[in-house]
Amino acid sequence: MEIGKLNHLKVNRKTDFGYFLIDEAGNEVLLPNAYVPESIELNQNIEVFVYHDSMGRETATTLKPLVEVDQFALLEVKQMTKMGAFLDIGLAKDILLPFSEQSSQLKNGQKVVVFVFEDEKTERMVASMHVEQFLFHEDITVEVGEKVSIMPYKKTNIGMQVIVNNMFQGMIFNTDLHKSLSYGLVDSAYVKNVREDGKIDLILEVPGYKNSIDHQSQTILDNLESNRGFLPLNDHSDPELIKRTVGLSKKAFKRAIGHLYKERKIRIESEGIYLS
Image (cartoon, rainbow, N blue to C red; front, side, top):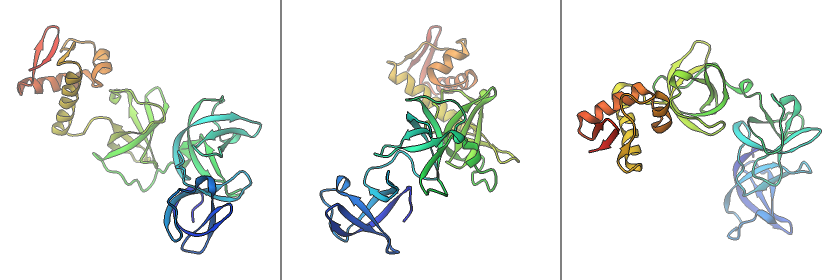
């Protein structure tokens, strides 16, 4: 049985307070009546989240948390106290972000990217804003060209720092930031380079000319279809306008519309481009 994680457990016995669930090693945990599904039966296997309640007791719930132990997540500050900030994870019990694990001053309602781990002394879930301390820089398991998941966590002068596959540290340089990325929200990118220091350079477009041109061309076609077959953009449009409208650099945009024009899928006019 893993604390702070989803577990598949067997329904072992019923009590006045709920049902006791059991793992393969014979460890039991209570599923309180408030979380017992109507269709529950003895010897049934169910998925539950196991955590410590406010009294420090191991407890199960059928509610799905926003984060598990050993994961990064964007969580909201529920309450500031003398102990630190309590973060909402979607359960009746919030988790603590101690002052020692905060990297900036916080306030109620603010959302922060944190890493959630199990405190060795209390065995309770605790959060930290020092996310880089929990990222791996050795034994990198991604390769150049691979599609990966990313979570943006810090904007710098040279680009956006991101968490890669919930494990590694990545960077998307400003020259490759051709669309807006939302702080703390999972997106996707492609590995451009794995550096000797274990950090990963990323791009947002599919690598390779053919894959890239197909992806960019489809982006323009999708935008045309959602805008009644017209976009007020052409070769002379401002790069920032192109980026805001279709999420591409001017170079990628020009290359894609040239490709679409050759395939006779669009018309290029002085006022913009049209679907053919």
